[in-house]
Length: 154
View (cartoon, one colour):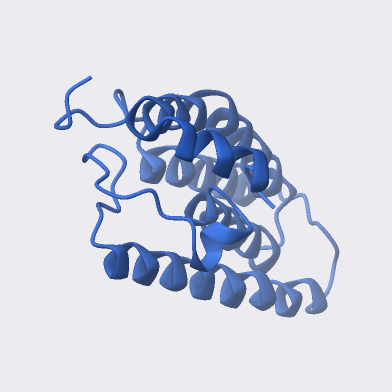
């Protein structure tokens, strides 16, 4: 693999997460199925929204500080292991999942919640293994050590 190659085929994060969100919201609009009735579930949804946004900002700033590409279709120049990457190998996908969870709670929709599970499973079984194979080839033992020390999600 040349240094110019990246993680290979890329499943668009935005497309999968957005399709699930829009699909779940559309079904919920036609046939509402509430997580819990009342305003409290919507207020609780603000917690993962804030956590997810902060986690994404922290991960993005960590990538910038390391001077490596944030987008998985671009080559990685550094193996980022500090900041949120010290406790999760995928804090960006985790942040998107938290924001998605927030949407399910704020819109009070079981369908959006179910679609979140589908999106997470898709990424966990397709995109993340592809990215990890690339990082293993690119960084070898350095990535192997990181992988044994830090969990995939949390």
